Amino acid sequence: MKRQEAEERMKEVQRIMERATLYTLLPGLPSIIGGVLALVGCGVSYAMIHSLNFLRVLALPIKQQYAFCILWTVIGIVAVAQEVWLTVRAAKRAGVAPMARPARFAALSLSPSVLVAVVLTAKLLIDGQMEYITPVWAMCYGTGVYTAGLFSLRSPRMLGLAFIVAGAIGLLWFPHYGVVLAAVTFGLFHIAFGLYVVVRSRQGATTEATCT
Image (cartoon, rainbow, N blue to C red; front, side, top):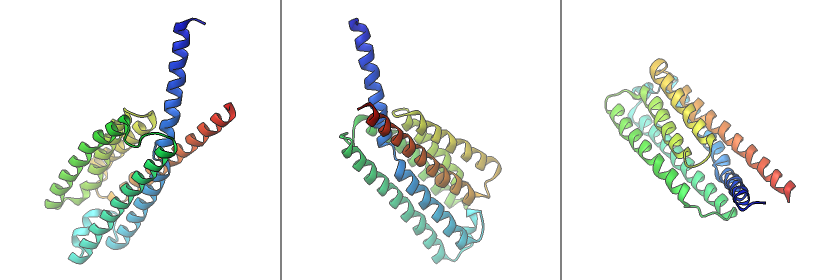
């Protein structure tokens, strides 16, 4: 075997191993848990406002408005915390540095989108246009996930595109159905993505066990 062919095969084996490692570190279970938390938040929100339009929050008594904000703040904190914890634990089990270069790039690429979403949310709240918050968050989050996926595999980019498309549709045609949009994107999309990652990870583990 020629040296060049051997080097090419070694590079191909390395790429396969890197892809397998990335699949083990993609947030499968955390995405499922985060999706379930989002669905719970949407259910509780609907019970509070009796509407699919988040704009109805402004009609609630001030104490209930605070409760609504606390609800989603807690859900956001818990979702992020459990994702970080489970992903770091998976990285340690796989023998990969939790803050490896691709992970740092992914985090940095997601941060600007989150910052933009926060600023736009503040502006929409001040103007009393809460019906646009969910589409804005969906598109900003999708943009960040898509960009972060450039340092990973194709599946995160597909998830990001799904968020962007759903957010754009919601913004242009269905702004008064924010609860439904949040349930579909942050809830069902995350659950579907998490299940996909779990299945692919198990398939990769089965293939590795078969080869050994």
